[in-house]
Every structure is written in structure tokens, then in C-alpha cells.
Length: 386
Image (tube, rainbow, N blue to C red):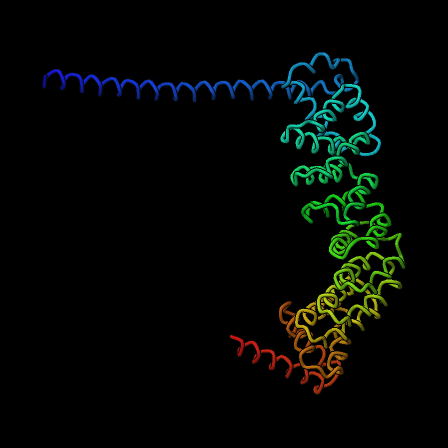
């Protein structure tokens, strides 16, 4: 019995080893077959892409009819991908024939059908593709998806509407933001609205005035990304808004207006109660040339916030042709922190020595000594901080 048991256990071990070997061979075979299959797939797709690119005029004109490629999933995907890529970069003169082909080939109808599918992954892909088509027919299915319970589908719909890039596509998003009915990531909404409203800032401004506080800030951050030249005093009114975030955003946008309109409003914002509103105003004033903006920046050198003083000093130092006048004015303000900020910026740019020498030669030693004292105080302050 012992010998029989021993032989039985040995055969069992051999059988298990054979089974493991067969399983390993099966796995290796599966991996090899899968790689070969994928290699053939990508090879065929590459050759089809080359053929479609070379013969694209014939495909677009219909000389190669849709029946030649519609029934093959890979060929259909290649043609649709090339078409959407060309639509994405097409200008207004190139777009109409592409949209005509999109409709006549049935690709648009197929995506519209998928956008109403019950399968989430299929619907999400279709929503994004519909936006890439830039077709008006795509707007309605995307608007329907804005009311979905699924946050991913809502975000996909917003991205799709943003890709269409027209004010008509923006209005459904703006309406839901104004009433607080749309819950999507702020970055997704702002990117889409910036794309849609870049040429129609009044549409954005109208809904900004109707929106709730949280969404008003979101819309205000988008507004400076649009073409603000046509707004004029409508934008100036935002500089008086009760919300500091909107006042700060207005400061960003005012730089795109005529300086005669922008500088007085920015000067007022540069003495706002909120420090980041003053900071945005000073940054904006730094981009506007002229004596009026220089005076406002000199006053900002006396600001209680260090960042505001630094940005004002940086903007003033860039006006190298007036630097001696600016230094005289900074000394007359009798504010050591402001003067130190100005000297610190000169030191950072490596022009302090030349500026000080010219100032002593052209003016007097007392004025130059004031600058020297400020530099020494700055050096001691830096040494103490270390």
C-alpha cells in the first residue's frame, strides 16, 4: 500500500505540473495572439488613415461615396476623426462644405442618435463629438444633457457646447448658472463660456447681472477673456460692484478700454478697501502708459500691502525714461517702505548704481543721499530677515 500511495502522489504532482504548464502556455499564447491582432488592427488603421488623407478631396466631394466606407467600423472611425479634426481648425469660409459633408454622409445623424443612448460611455463620447462638429443641430441634444443626473454627462455637455463656440450655445449654460440649476466644475464652465462669448461680451454681462453671488464671480472671471472693447461704460459700472471679486475682475478688463475711460476707474480701484482689488488695479495701471497712470502708481507705493507696493514699484521701474522724475516723486512722498520697494526693484534689475550716479550728477547730493539711505535700510532689513 505504501508503494501504491507513493506512486499515486508522484503522478498527482506530475499531473498538476502539466496543468500549470498548459495554463502558462495558454496565457503566453493568448498574449501573443492579442498582440498580433492589435498589430494588424493598428497597421490596417494606419493604412486606411493614409488612404483617406491622400484621397480626402474625393471623399469630401462624394466621388468616393459614403457607401464605400460607412459599413466598416474602422474606416468609418478614420473618416469621422479626420473630418472632426478639420472642422476644429476650419475658418468660416472652410466650414460650410465640411458641415455639408457631415450631414450628407449620415455621420451627424449617427452621433445625434448616440447622444440619446442609454449607455453612459456611448452617450458621453457622442456628446463630446457633437461639440466638435460645430453644427447647430448638435445644440439641442447637448442642452438636454445639461439636465442629466450624472455629473460626467453634464460636464461633457458643457464641454461640447463650449466646442461649438457660439453665443447660442452659451445661453443654455448661462441660464442655468443664473438660476443655480447647473452644477459642474467651475473650470469646465469658465472654459466653455470663454470660447462661446469671446465675441459677445454683452451676452455674458447680461447674465452676470442676473446670476447668484457664487456664479456671478465665475462669470466675472470669464468676462476679461472676451472682447471688451465694445462695452465701454458698461464695464466701468462693474468697478463699482458690491462684490470685491467682480471689482477685481473689472480691473483686469479695464486695460482693454480707452485709457481715458480706464485710468480714472483703475485709480479709484487702486485705493479700494480690499487688498487684492488694489493689486489687480495696480497691475492693470502698469500696462497703461501716461502721466495719470504714473501718478496712481506712485500713490500705490504707499500702500499698506507689500504685494501692492512691489507691483507698483515694478511697473514704475519699467518706465526707465522717467525714472529720475519717479525717484524724486517717491522721495517727496516721505514713505520709507515705498522708497525701499522702488530701490529693491532697481537692485533686482541691476540698474541702481547707474541711476543713482546720474541722479547725483544731475540733481544734488542731498537727493542722492536719500536714495543711499534707503538702500542701506533695505540692506539691513534683508539681513535681519535672514
